[in-house]
Amino acid sequence: MEDTTHFDRRGARYDQDETHQQIVTLLLNPFTIAPGERILDLATGTGLVALRVAKLVGPCGEVVGLDTSAGMLAAARCSAAQAQLSNVRFEQGDAELANYESASFDRIFCASALVLMSDVKAALRRWRHLLKPGGTIAFDTPAKPFGFSQRASEAALRRGVKLPYGDLGDTSEKCLALLAQADLEVVSIRKEFASTTPIKLDRVIAMYDQRIDHPAWRGIKEAGPEIRKAIRDDFIESATSDAVDGLVPNEVALFFSTGMRSHIQQ
Image (cartoon, one colour):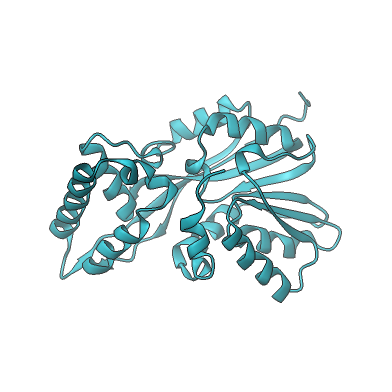
């Protein structure tokens, strides 16, 4: 199981990030969730997806949220209790090893977390088997531009450190390939912008330092001290050169991909 320190620390504040809320809204927008559906929310975090869909599936439906972070799950359970939702449960576990009965979910969602899987292709194939025939899975992947996170990945790459989110699904062709490799029929692939608000330069630098223990930035954290310093210096130089009146551009775009398990059960 991955190191959850970063997420445990952020559990109480995670929902306050407007971009996270925007991403969940964009992920769920195309779907008409029906009463009685059974839904799995992988890497649920504080339950942003799970709690929204739980209100839609009704008392006859069920939502399961799975995450490795105890801190995130504590926040999710608290929110579920406050909303008096009895049809959602949160479990601690590794999304890549999700161990549920085959063909038992109508839908699977994975918001802002596919890039954290150690073997994305294997994870998608496993998740496909959890879907009922005709069931769908939806996930997002960073596109370009991707705000200060793209700036960090490019600074790292210039020093020979490749971060997994940098190019996993940054084109529609790559998203199509991810679905095809998991034997999922393509329902839709679309690019959307989640945030365009510039950020103050000093805040951008602070965000970089706060994020260094994020699993997606493991490559930077594990690099030698000289490489880490060089990447940080490069990041700051890039952000400073692009700043206008002390504000750094922060356009955030993502691809949202939806695949379906064939009606012919395999």
